[in-house]
Image (cartoon, rainbow, N blue to C red; front, side, top):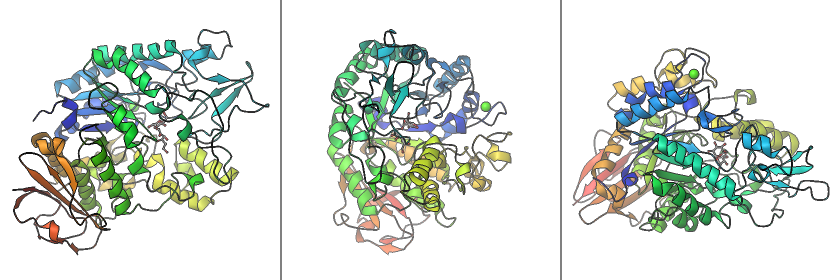
Length: 560
Ligand code: TEU
Ligand code: CA
């Protein structure tokens, strides 16, 4: 089945190269490692691989700090290794999507090295420099990674803006020369044969016309900068210009990472006429479990309720229908593992709840993204001390919130890190039960999850009831049934306030699918769980008990 745009019924597999497969015994995953595992990815049945950044980088933020946009970081291999991966992927009918990080670069990028030379350097305006105000930073904006978003530069007496780490200065998109440098880089990779871009925090590139202080929460030293910089006044102009300079010249798939984007914003970014981007990663459904104290942001350990989650998913399904395209994701390299966060990772329910969550997501409208290891039901990391975490966001947040602002105590913050640290997603891929999960024969850069002995790809491939094969079936269904891509979404009548079960239908001219999922470990009865006429297409149990739903049971029926 082929939709209007090929990426509409495609499924994406996200590879975090650092954690996927080491090929040269240094404990860090690399490109040759990815190439060696393409058969596995192909077996799952996906269409596209998204690679997190592999460009040259000092790696303070695992590659999101790029010092050369046209070079491969030696940690990952060479440009020749990349071309080999691209060719091997294309041979198997797999496309490759690159990460594009152009809200900021590394401070070690040549542009910044020039820019910091002084006010008259031709690259000065590639970045955002401001004079001090009353002897301090120009505004009270906080960085996403704690502390001020401004860094003072002694030599020129000015501050530069960094929404992320100090070593990630923001690029100045007001400068047309910078913009065209970015388009040149994109065309260079597209000409090399890459099939798309995942654009890092792309909706933060248009900064406000005037810089003003933001709102601080009680006890906070700095203001949340997101409402000030997200979806800025020139963002659509910049994306349309990029679209004309790059996307219209190649057949690319594009997804914009857009924190703080509403459905209204998404309708413009991902409108179905291909003038800006193909789709977005929105953050609403992964922000519902934030701390009730806004000063603590995402740091929390409470589970989200099904009604809150459902209301949000339903809103995106209905508001974008026919107007814009969304991506579908439960997790990525920044988010906790889905089965630990929204399901139940205890031995009794891990497999069944992982399959349930996959079913609910993969029958929605949009393009699904599977984060490496999700198809195995990999879980959060069991890190017990601060020292076990590598991620700078986690380390900085602990320092600021516990030690500097005293907004939370240490043991509580460790619980929050266990629930939400980005390192939960970054532990090495679990290939088999051998040393270091088959990821590397060297100590891995981040500890493997000890549960690799039972949770691993080799075991999953040998078990016809594994999470892996459930994902494989869901992907196959999407490729076979137009209703999954095109069908109208509707919540089952009576499901609006159900605290335990999520049930929806998808309908096109010829068919209706009914998707029912029990989000609890309790056996329940729902009349709508047994349609009067229909075929069971997929389930996470071996038999069907009609109106009875066992723990985490999920069923997909084709009606009439
Ligand atoms: O993340 C952007 C983002 O929204 C961050 O707030 C991030 O998700 C945060 O850790 C959530 O608490 C992107 C990348 O995905 C992330 O890995 C990078 O560190 C970041 O941009 C900077 O490039
Ligand atoms: Ca390596």
